[in-house]
Length: 554
Image (cartoon, rainbow, N blue to C red; front, side, top):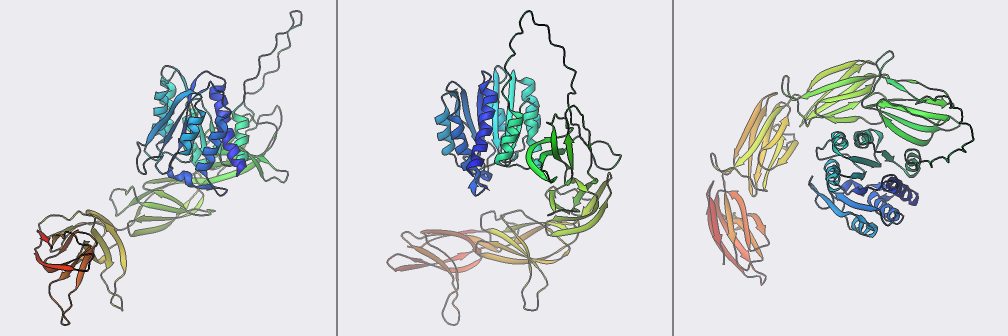
């Protein structure tokens, strides 16, 4: 665990050496303070690793380095505007940044694109050289486009650079934010574990070589060295034999090879059309696109150029999930694909375009309570595009105090959908439920019963669903609102006014308070207010459908 903390510390320290150790520019470090930072690595929350690493690194930064500190997601759970420059760029800011990091609450969303933009503006990137170092353990969750932002900042900045540390991200996740660094001339560093982080930094961050000493005046000029190839490793990935190279959306993972031919130390992860200079040695190279991947052992020798071909043996599947034939695609529809060789199925939402290993693809589309499953054959290098219909009707439910009256919209509004057919014991199977007005249900064709609840009022309404049909269910609750005030009361309880044969009254609801308001079926009621000294008072009231009744019990 301590090793991982040192690894993250190394990431920030070497980034700081790159950005503010060798150039006189200001830097803002942005820390992801979203709720996902509570996830554990080797039994320790990532947020603690980040805090300790910041504290360690900042002790080694030169005193005149002008560093600022920004965080997002540390004040509000659901806000995309929760971005704060806590420590402006200034010399000697190490202790202030450490204290700020220690006080953060990790609970919100991940507006990383907006945060980088605000940091760049705070650094006056259109006027001065500026660097932003982003440390994130998650992807953008607020609709920002980090790739487009990188291009914008590079085009309009004087000399702007964004370095990105992907803390615990997968290769597929990393490629979605690496473009922010790539588009500004910065570095993307994937910190998946201590050793991988240190090796990635050793390769991508290096001090400039010292200038050579001038040769003596009388010494002859050295003979020019023979030209070396710019790159010695140019792999090509294809979906099928003879297919066009894959250059967008794919990834390359590079590992050192162990003597037994298995994966050894992690080297780097790259994306798209990959060109590199690898040190001589044996490597394991993993090529992937979507859910398809393949790997090869590659031996690099000095002076040689290698162009290995990686055949992913994959095709492209495009699924349009629809509630009924000809209806619009449902963006929230779940598309689950159990593809060949999968450890677990892949889940997508809405229109789905996925690269998958060739073979039979078991696809399940779920829209509300409607489910459709189909096995679709997919050949290497081919694209299959298909509509999948869940076969549901759409229902919107609302409760009204009285027919034609006001719609109930309080927190006590709820709906439960049951199968209409009763089981042998007289009960019904529950299908689904929802809360609040305009509750929406996508249901397979069948007969159902809707149980609508508004506080103390409950009404059942049968309905039938047909595929592709829309229903606006308006449930008349035959209820009003009863507002009770009982000064000094410790409890208020509502009873039916009529007693049963044993002289008892049915209790409908109660509150431990001096005020109680609830929707209740129209009728006559007795209200009892109890005080802490066990004394009680009683009042009577009549509630009418669609009307408000007020009662004071003293």
